[in-house]
Image 1 (cartoon, rainbow, N blue to C red):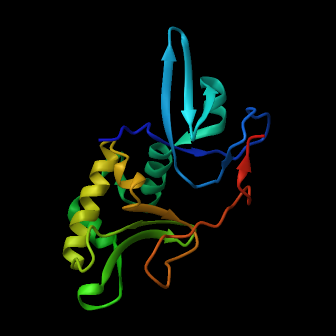
Image 2 (cartoon, rainbow, N blue to C red; image 1 turned 90 degrees about the horizontal axis):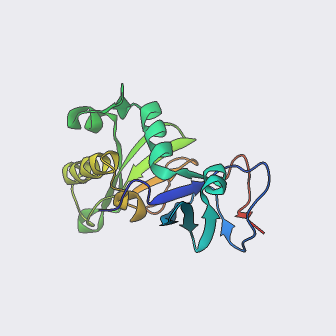
Length: 182
């Protein structure tokens, strides 16, 4: 099980940066490892080492941002996850393909600017199985397991529901280009 502090997003930046050659894209999750020796704590993100205060200035944990979004979407109410029944009612399930070659994807959105897609475990899964798998991933993520997000079983998008099956797309807002820490 991956820890909840395993994945991070780059924040919108307004100031000084580390001297690295990595390019960080907004809304893209990056793996993060805390490295400590004595009183010195550093964070390793995408092969780049950051001092803890610099890291705090530059990055948000995926877990924190997603939980805020899910509260906005009604998947978390008063700090608690919704029931399986409420989860199913909130889901907007779209089917791509047909027969044994179909994929059912459960979307949750309040507008096209903030939506999450829960992708099926297997091709040809019924809507019921897709929603069951989606709810299991939802609960696992809330309990601190970042693997469903890391494996793209749960995805964030802000451009609306895709016409065809595949990754949700992200339109960069705030800072529109990949961010380089040079």
